[in-house]
Image (cartoon, rainbow, N blue to C red; front, side, top):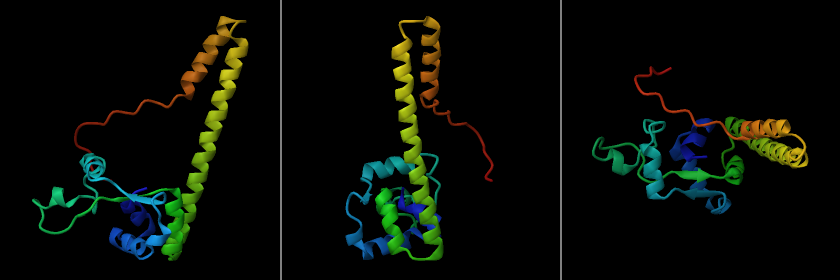
Length: 164
């Protein structure tokens, strides 16, 4: 998760979150948190989904447009362990509650990933045991396997969309 997203969830500014992390740098090794490379960050801010988000523009993007404001360095990305460590750095009630929700979400994602892998293995086992017996079962297993694949990514709508 990016620092700007976590800051929004915790109800603090990105600057405050990063200051807290810098003050406790020993708690955030490279496998807990890392800074995006400049080219990764530039690709990230060029995406329309987040290019208008406050605090995410880099200096190179905003320096010619606005004399102040915006980011001057690439964003930090936090792994699951880094997000967990943030709970010891940010001690407000909201930060603790949000951190619990984020951890539960990570657990649910891991659980769903395991269930999908297990289901895929079971379908494959059934397909190999029935394959020689009946073509109808093969078609059914092919359809089930197609359902297990992730859906195609929807295309981005073009045109005016009012803000909600």
